[in-house]
Structure formats: structure tokens, C-alpha cells
Image (cartoon, rainbow, N blue to C red; front, side):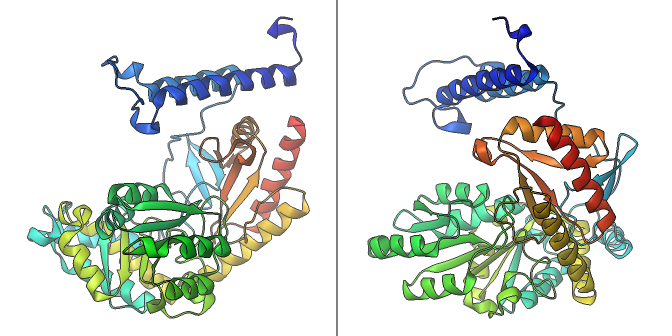
Length: 443
């Protein structure tokens, strides 16, 4: 039977199956994944359009075109992206930005950036150890250390590079890194760079972590456990008190990536530490980013003085990178100060997130293990459904990104909603009503 004579649903299923077979073939030719190496060295084409990664991208683009799904990525926003945004001159309810507390675009935050540019220029023009150190760097790091109740902090120009260079420097071939299976790519790359043995444990499964430690701890010099404070795909968090107890008993370090949890969890937004009421010194390495609540760009490590001193002097991502521009550090500091002055923003974020989660579950949507704070997935069951729903919602004035295979397992493909304290119940109700209508059309 010709494909053109098939029913619409069956045709789409056949196209999707064909695309998945092609993607599998493209992935097999890649060998070790993104680097494009093959198991047996052989001469290949020097053309980039013959690279396996580009071939895989072309397959995805062709599939989207055949299915009539517009590319949801690299949409150009006309201004500040918060609870709403402007794209192509049209206003959208926006669930695709990390502006959780509305600080990006806040007058005080903007003014801090302007003042910093006037005083320090657009670049500090050197690595910080050489001649790039500025008072604003020290002020930001002191404020971060105070927020965690620890000795010191060190700010990096890239959030991703913060994990890569920290893990890559601290651990070596005689060490072990144990990480949650859903840990961020930056920690995986850092672990690979370090040369340490790496073992993943089941998501948020402390018992599985402990079994690995009981079997493996004595085989390694140093052991680092890496988890996230709030997982950006599922919107859930680990049992931090139990992790602290485990790491102490097994003489391991514990690192918590607070990219999405700082400013979001806890009564005053001080993160998972405040949520559980623990002392900041009970965790060995705190990591976070400046691009979410703090409305800048970059990352940081907070902890004891010895840790931060080592990273300042030896971590390649700090030592050999230009210092953070003052107009990035200054607004991050201003946002951090606003967070402490206006904890009601955290309360509003937690309330609207809980409302979204409750209404979504009541409507029968699969929200996975999300606890309903800032990050809420709606599982669609397939990448095709996620892409089509994202496109249809966009056409109706709602901007939400699909998360597709291989970023998540195919059956776990989803729409990922980032909430802001500036979202309203009316916007949530409108969004879920449209989502119900469009989901029914796919059935």
C-alpha cells in the first residue's frame, strides 16, 4: 500500500519509525557519540557535511518537515523573557525561561549592569590572577559564601565550565565519582576529564548509592558523590540529609549542583540547604549558576577556604579564562541582594508552581515525579507528540519547549514548563485548557 493512501495517524507512525531507524544508524556510525570517533580508525571525508553529527541533524530536520512540525529551537525573543515574551512581534505566555523570580529586566538589576559598565568597561581584559580582579568579583563571592554559610566562594565565567573544570581538577585516576543517573552533562564531562572511575546510581536512590559505596569505597583514594538540588528535567530533589549521613560514613565528598534549586527552594530561596534546614558546611562542594535566579551568566563554587583557594590557583577553567565581566557580576550581586530583601517572590513562585502541578494532575496529565517548584514536566509518551504539542501551543500563543529523545528516553519525551513568580492562575488555566484541547486532537 502506498504511504499516501494510509490514514494520517498510521502514516505519521510509519514516518516516525523510519526516522528512529535512521537515527539509530547515524548514532552507530558515530561510535563514541558526539566526538564522531569510530571503533576502528579509517580514513573519512574531511567535509563537515559528511560528519555523522551533521547527518543526524539532517535526519531530524527532514523528519520534522515531513511531519509538518516547525523547528521549536532558536526562536528569537524581542526583549526580556519572563512570564510573557515577545517573539516575532507577537506576545506569548512563556514557560521556556529560567527567569524564576523576575529579576532579569528588574530596574535595579539593569542599573547595576549599567553602572558596572561605566566604571569598569565591557571587559576586565585579563584572567583574574593576572590583572582581571575587580572589587565587584570579591563582593559577589562574599555574598555567595554568606548565603551558604561557608568560608568562601569562587565565580566562573561559565556555568557548564564550572562543573567541568572543578571535577576535572579535583579528581584523578585513583578516585571514584558516583553520580545520580540524571546528573547534568557538565558533571559528566568533568568526570570524564578527571580520569576518575565513574559510576551512576539510580535516580534519587540512596540505597543503590550505599550498595555501590560498600562494594567500591576501599578500591579508591577519594570518592565524590554528585547530585542536583533540583533536577531540571523532572523537577524533583534528593534526600539531602540522608546523603550527608552516607557520605560521612563512607568518608566521601558530597557535591550539590544548585543550578535550579538556589532561589527556588526554601522559605527565603536559600536552596535545598534551607529546605532541609541543614548547615551549609555539611556539604563539601556547593555549585550553582548565575544565569537563573541571579539573572547573569556563569557559575560558582562555594565551600571551605582550602577548596576555593585551590580552584583559584589551579583550576584551568578559572586560571586560563578571562575574568567575569563586571556588567555580569554586578547584576548577579544585585539579584542576590533583592532575593534577600524580597522573599515574597519565592513564596509566589512556590504557590503558582504548586497550583500548576495540582491543576495539571487533576486534568489527567502525567507530571512525573515533579514536586511542583519551578520545573514541571508533562510527559507526552513520544518525541513526535511532544514536538507537535509544542508547535500547536506556540501557534496559540504559548511558548513551551519539547524535550525529545535522546535527551530523555523516547517514552519519557515531554513538554517542560518553567514557572515564574510572575505567572498568574489565569495564565495557568488558559495554558492547561489549550493543552487539553490539543492533546485530544492527537488521540
